[in-house]
Length: 307
Image (cartoon, rainbow, N blue to C red; front, side, top):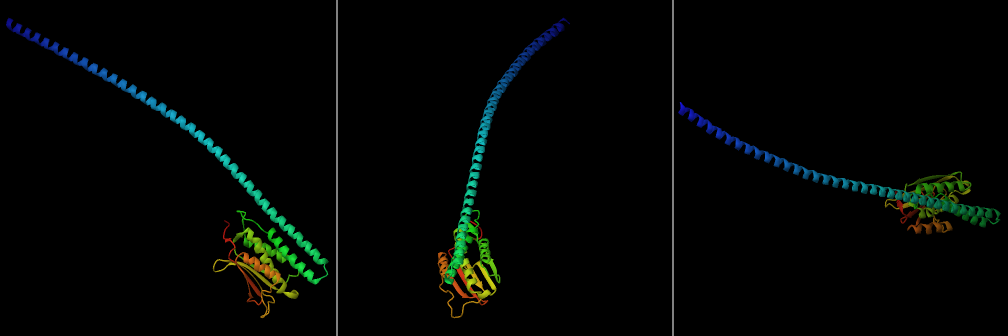
C-alpha cells in the first residue's frame, strides 16, 4: 500500500508539474496575444490618425478650393453684370442714335417735300398771273412735275434698315396725291395693282417721278374735253423676275400713224430716268383702245423683305 501511495503521489506531482508548465505556456501565449492585440490597436490608432490627418488636409484643400471657386464665381458674376449693363447701355445708345437718325431722315424728306410743294405753289401763282397760254401750259407742266417730286419725298416711309421702302405703299400714296392734285379729273377713275416688294429708298423717288410723268401724260392726252375713263397702274415682276412699271388707259389713244413716244419733255424724262435702271419705256396700244406704257427696271433692287 505504501508503494501504491508513493506511486500515486509521484503521478500527482508529475501532473501538477505538467499543469504548471501548461499554465506557464498559456500565460506566455496570453501575454503575446495581448501584446499583439495592443500592437494592432496601436497600429489601428496610428492608421486612423494618419487617415484623419489626410482627410482633414483634403477637406481643408477642398474648402479652400470651394472658397476660391466661390470668389471667382462672384467675380465672374460681377463682370457679367458689368458687361451686361455696358451692353444694354450700348444697345440703348444705338437705339437712340437709330431713332435720331430715322427722325432726321424723315424730317429731311418732309422738309424737302414741303420746300418743293412751296415751289409748286409759287409756279401756280405765277401761272395765274400770266396772260400767255403757252407760258401757262409750261408753268402748269413744271408745277405738276415739282409737285410729283414733292409728293415722292413726303410719302417716302423707310423700313427698319433705313435704306428701303415698300413699293406698293409708296406708289399707292403717290398715286393718291396725283389723283387729288389734277383738277377736272372726276370722270377719270384710277386702278392699281402693286406687287408687295421692297425697293431702295434712293430708287423710290425716281420711280415716283416716272409714275407721275406717265399718269400726268395719260390725264393730259387720253381724256380731252372732260372725257371719262380709267387709268390702270401696275408694278409687277415679269417672267424673268424683272420689276416692271406699267401705266395704261382706255382713253382716246394715239392714231395709227402717230408716234407713241411724242418726243415731248415728259417722254424724255421717262426715258432718261428709266435708263438709270437699265430699261426703256415701251409704248403700245392698250387692248382697251388707249395707250399702254411699260417700263422695265432690271437694275432696280427689289426684295420680298427688307435686307
